[in-house]
Image (cartoon, rainbow, N blue to C red; front, side):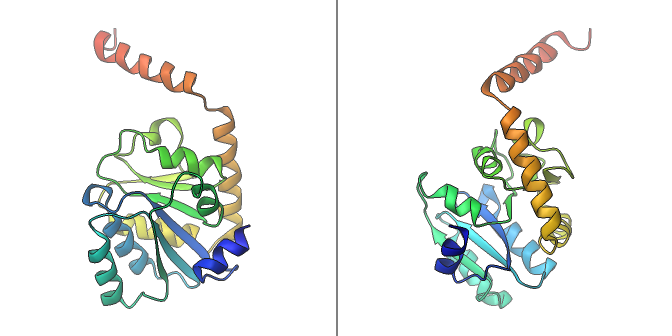
Length: 195
């Protein structure tokens, strides 16, 4: 129940939500998302952190410095059974990681009909993200570009809905077999080169 989850988070139904769902550790770059969210300054938008970790205190301190305490929520750790409701209550998953071999949260979010924005260091960009269709890819550490993505997506419910449908459709066609075939093709290319 999207409305009930949002009510629990103290976020209105009409608002838009950018979601970070990962451990709050430096290489996941949650601070980049916070800075981009502040720079984007989209009215009636919220930022939700689902996860816990060593950067939580730094994030909370920076939220206070930016004057965003009324628009940022920290949910703490959520187990696997709780994540579908977190995804369904949100509008855009953002994974700004310095490195993530795949980023399973991207799969999970897209299965729940959530568009995504991932850094160019997240492996799922190759298999799942179709820029402009079901998500976005931005250069890692580029807070300005991430802010522009938030400005494009968060205030536009029609775009979010369209991209969410495309995200879900992509997951209906993606399979572990497709992933393995892509991995094999990559290894073959690395070994054989372009010959």
